[in-house]
View 1 (cartoon, rainbow, N blue to C red):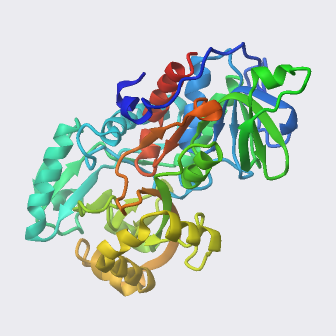
View 2: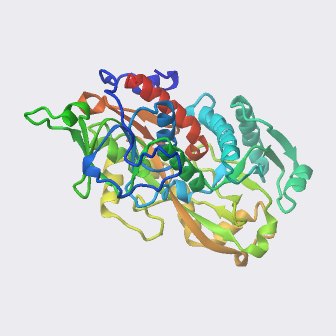
Length: 463
């Protein structure tokens, strides 16, 4: 078993036996040419797989790719509830390739981010995917921020982040002529990329290797197959039945879930614990008008507040040349609530009753009010941005896109800081591996995470 995962899954049962043998995936092709995503080319009700990955975001697709490259004889399928892949967290983030400076030393986030960034740059070069290693400044604008900045610098060194250096005002100006600050950390290995393009490239690799992608497949139930009196082969060889909202089903031997905003609910469907619960936080971005984009060269970040996993409002260049400003962090009243007034009674009741949100809110009331205020009034956000670039005015910005972060929260109101990999017990539980709490920097870390998942799947399911 992978040492880093031993604590999280060590108490779970182990499936007996290995695979009985694989066969080409539903969209298999001997030609090796890129193939279209298969949303309806094969009836889901007739499909059987050795391994199924639930979730077609960047982590699920990277994991599917890693598994099929390592085990090409196995039949592996990806299930995605939307008609397209990578449309939620993967398609709604800032596109930053993080360096790994922020995360607690020795944590999975720290290790996987540093490894993942290096792997991602290498992958983009191999595949011809455009990226920019534009760097990042983490800037202290007040004297009281400097000790926190220096501590963050030391953390980055502990994490093995390359090229870090502390710079003073004159060097800040050389890198970002319009940025003011007393001191900054220069992170030259931070970059930007279009993560949806990366995710779709993972999907193409997966399908070219014989994997299958089933879109429009929203998982509704996960159960053990009920064997017929004749002891059907499918019932014995593929004992897990996954049903969707249309009444279709697929069968498999083992399941890996990478369900993002729905990871706790998918875990509960499989008979495993839903804890930690997922609480959705919406992040709204502003856009710098094109004629003002000269004000920002690379990523400019504030010194983060150590009490929160959110990194604060920052300046982020995009691959298309635009500049995003943000995001804030406010509670979303729907798991996929990208607009301020999106609302789901089911999601809200789930958050209130089953998570520790009330405790979190009571402990951080002033922070929450401030974030809500900035979300409503552009002037408040601009005033904050002017601490870094005084030339920015309200007339220079537009409201932009939003994303929703799948933040894991325990029942005591504590934000779960690290990635969570767990499973369950029983007939289904010992055939499932859940990947949870994988918001930022999961996109940066996706290739490193996928390697760890492939290792754990191989050990746990005795491949």
